[in-house]
Length: 127
Image 1 (tube, rainbow, N blue to C red):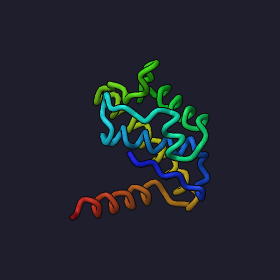
Image 2 (cartoon, rainbow, N blue to C red):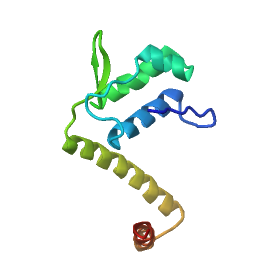
Image 3 (cartoon, rainbow, N blue to C red):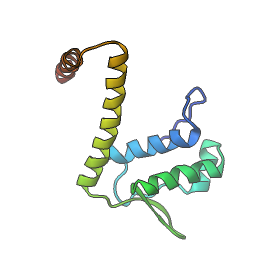
Image 4 (cartoon, rainbow, N blue to C red):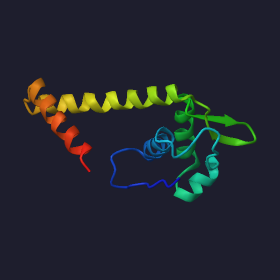
């Protein structure tokens, strides 16, 4: 797991950490049972506050993506494939809402957006 903190990002550091770990879990890079670095070790590695890494881990635990075991550390939860898929669908819906809002600001019709999406989808299918 390689976390990169960007000072140019408008997202707070804990959100950057949260998003990158979440993506690693949802993509399957991190699997159920995999251990995460301790809160202190991750803070040291990233040169950030322990409070920052603790907040990211707490959010991941609220999302049921990781489990914290007292005295043992934090581990990727044993979430089922259906749960992981649901989490990914939820994120996709958020992205789609952003796209819809942006297209409305550009005065695109629903059909224009669908046509554009279809074109991009087809381009992505070709090697």
